[in-house]
Length: 318
Image 1: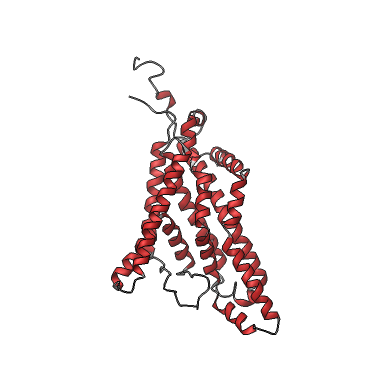
Image 2: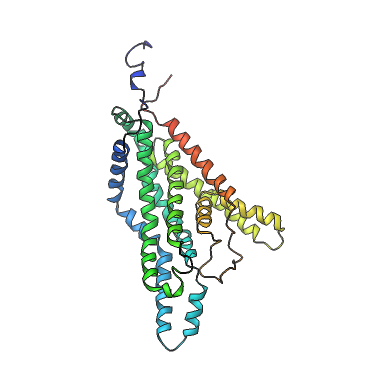
């Protein structure tokens, strides 16, 4: 085929890097993605199930509150509420449901670009007045809002329940900034996870392969960091080595999200309830700020770079 023929010369298909236009093009892409996922029943089922910790807490606090209203076991109930650190329950809520939230992320994000690569839909997108940034931001916003919705729905129910029933037990008074901290933490976690899955999806032509790759990395890095955590909890490990092993925990995909939440909430977390100011031995201390930036910002930048380089209307075969 002559190199100057209309088919071989693909310059007319180059993507024009036009400025982002007041949210029109990218929002259409995001809205279409959101509307499609919201019709999927499994999205709602997994969202509800991921809030299991909040449900357990609401049941437990309800029965303890009932004991306070009676004449028996009031001391036990009062002790129960004094041990609760409320902001830790939002961290525990994420920890409890993180595997289901990973599954939701795969549902909403694994095929976002990969399936477009497979169906050659990019030819359609870029035949319109749509730049790379329009496309990528639209896909990102669609994934981000969906995973944030999945994280926030159970948390908002627990916020409302706590604010209505447990203000006398310190739900809002212990940390007046708790609600803004929780929301900010979840927003950052959703942005982090959405960026990673966006980059992974851009590498493949099938959403299933992209999803399997992300899930594999998520699980394997989680196993590796879990082994480091178990070794760190051994009695014969030196303090310096233990600190290093604790830091390794945050190099997993899950650990990065957990590190963001711990940093924003300013807590080490808890298993369920704890004495205020004391950390259980099984809790990994919150990471330093530099470590959080290292394990989250660098992967996010790399994934955005990959997505930008991989997204194109056609693939030129030499």
